Image (cartoon, rainbow, N blue to C red; front, side):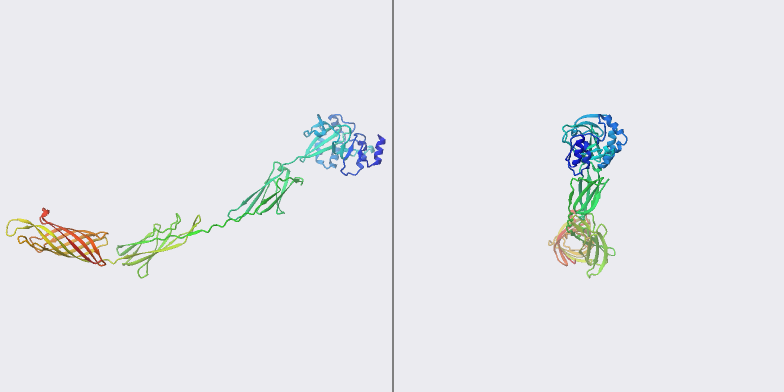
Length: 548
């Protein structure tokens, strides 16, 4: 065996490592990443002697002075010093082991030692040994990329350590206790999912983009940098894991873990579109107020009262009353009164004389009101007129009538109170003057004569002079009805009598200054009033009235 070792040392560049007795030769070679085949284990460069038998011997090995430091040195030199505490704790605290099959199939929990077989063809990332042990230098070293090329599997202890989301699987051949790293398995974290909430202000079109990150393994992430259109814009960090911007474009996300290493992002790039410009509001349809005014006049003490009614005026907007101002002008255009109507949209203006008056109404919407696509505002004007007639003076009229009278008359030449009833045909003419008031009542005084048309010599033929006091009511259709008192046959003391007058007139023709009426009239004589059927007068004819 010694001659083989020296021969291999001399060659130096041999491609096969023949056991750990040749480890110094392998260590002397420059590491190129090439796999080194090992066919034998054990020898003076072994990490520990005697061979391990059980976990108790592992614990005994770790109790040896300097062994724990040597293990940490090996781990440090191989770039994983952070696993030192867990490896030393597992080996120093070993109290039991579990039986396993082949080492490359074992997946124990951290701290559990498995007895397994390392079969030919399996590889190690590195193997620790003591290359200068023959020179009494026990400084540990390592061989990288070792492949077991022996004829049979070798027995080993296997355990695993988890650190920094990586699973480190170690094996220790029982024959030499060379601590070896069989594999490093990354524990994959859930990729970071990034979403962008894009909000557009409907009034201004301004953009607000909020990026948010989520993952069940977000604690492994240190930061997520955000770039917009290739320019760094900010980052997302705990605890909000959000980023807000008002810029549109291509958002790119790059995550790193606590050690600055790249961390997977599910969707690295998201396009955020520019917000559309808000639509231009449709032009408002302007609705002006409507104006409507009416005037009426009535005589009052000291003049005339003109009533203004603007209730037909409106702004057009529900719940908004118009403001109405009135200016009244006379027939010469001079202003005789101004008034702003109250909420009832009515008012009164007093004038002193008759004549024609014109009111100009100005209707205004007090404040602009917008409802839907309509804007209610502006001003409207309208006018109305009223004529106050000059008070009518006395009206003259003449009546021409025909009819009959029936009266009880005393018997001439007797001393007893004897009488007889006589019907006498009559033709009458009356002249009168009347005063009509604003309430359409008329008071008239009348004088006339009733001409007897009796032709029988055996009957009394007497014409009668009479006076009437009439009270007439004129209707809107021109008809009038009236009553009054009459003094009949005033020139004869024995036959004169008061009478009750009733009559009516129906207009037949109306002119500018005259009106022709059909007149029907009757009288009830008070003399012998207890004998009505023999004391009355009825006649009919025409009345011509002169004046307005």
